[in-house]
Length: 255
Image (tube, rainbow, N blue to C red; front, side, top):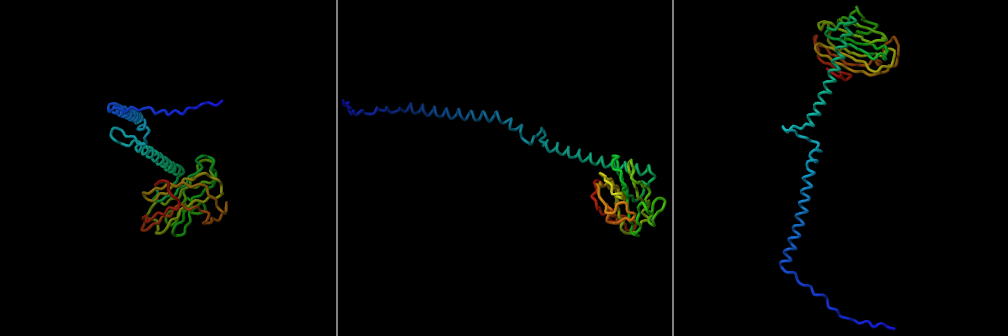
């Protein structure tokens, strides 16, 4: 049985046109919504702004001073001061050790080494100096009371001390110094292991501290001193009994 389907032409619903008043109210509603959204954004920014300022890397106090830079500078100055104080302590300690062992601490020119401060560096380190005349000052020559033509001598000598080790070479007066180069160095005689050796060079009113770590020599415990086995520290040039130049082979840590 077939269904009868009727084609009905149903006209669309009529749309009533909006009045001018309705359109005005609709525009006002949209504007109010946009303004409310903008107000929410502004409020969020006001709330988050103080937190953002606190997290800044550059803080300013009442007098507009960058406190971060000031703090960093203070730390840097404090660290520098601590290093200088430590080197001054080492310098004073070396003077005391030399004086206690009868060495000349008032000499015009002086070369001092100190090691085994921790009691574990029991090695035989030797101070060496060579004058322009060719005189070589070390434990085999020009030991106290013998002096060179320039007045130089090794006046403190120690061998593998179990306590603090010190050696000192001194020239009492500038008037005896001949023109030329005075070379200073250290020899590790028995080739023993050590952590660090403090070195002090005084020339007139100039003073230098060096730190020298362990080094080997090719001829341990040899009675012949080979130049290549001596660790060079500095060269002082004298002219007319005055210091003309100081050449640092090792970098001084203070002066």
